[in-house]
Image (cartoon, rainbow, N blue to C red; front, side, top):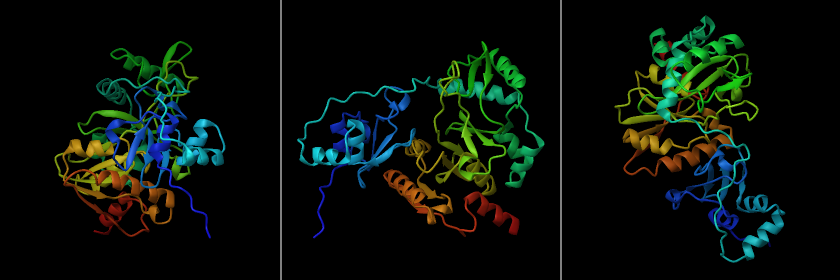
Length: 355
């Protein structure tokens, strides 16, 4: 006869570990907590997601993941066998919650209005190279939409990056702006070569910038947030995975997809449809709040078709779907297409080309 194991609720395990929980999320399928492994990079941050249906956890920042038993074992630094016996046989006495210390001690980004103003001016000094423009045209974007969205090429020479920082610094403080840092006593810009993608909020303000990297063949590594989070970069600032809003913000139906550039392209090809874009299938922090603030009444899920063959992607989408469907009186549907086209942008482009 198979041995029966006791179910260990993930929230109970988290309380037994002394984790700080976000009270506003208690009762939801996804409960937010402060991550004990990376410290969440600041007080009052909640990037550890506790899934109460499956009793598993995942940090959207450092990637730590596991179940109730491994959470307790890793925090207490004991074996999983010891952890299980402690949780299964222990009392319901919980530790006093203590905010974890960030092991990185990273600088937090400046306020949104300040970041947006800096990035708008920064982009005004930059241009878009011919090869980057060709890449965007191949995706189906017009020159007018390319200019409107504000894509620009990263300056490649260090001298050009220092000059850019000097120009922006004439009107703005660069401390707390992800991407900028000090080098040999002078402000400059971090990041690999590629083109910049503005990531905007529901009001059109630039929350951060993503880089579409040059010369990267791994599709999972083609995009990187503009950040100067490395502790070895003096006065550098981390970035977050912000939710991007693109298209006609007055519409009551919103499509959800992964990736700001994908959303920009799909929105343009679908005659300015409203798209709300996450930074990844597990980077959904702020998605529900953004949809609620937009006041949409219908959501159409348009995530990549690799969910058909990738269980990790599928599980991330399922967790996202459950959270979004908690919005009251929301109509929710899933958009499907020929899986020969991975993304909704590719599919829309094929339809345009066939006309």
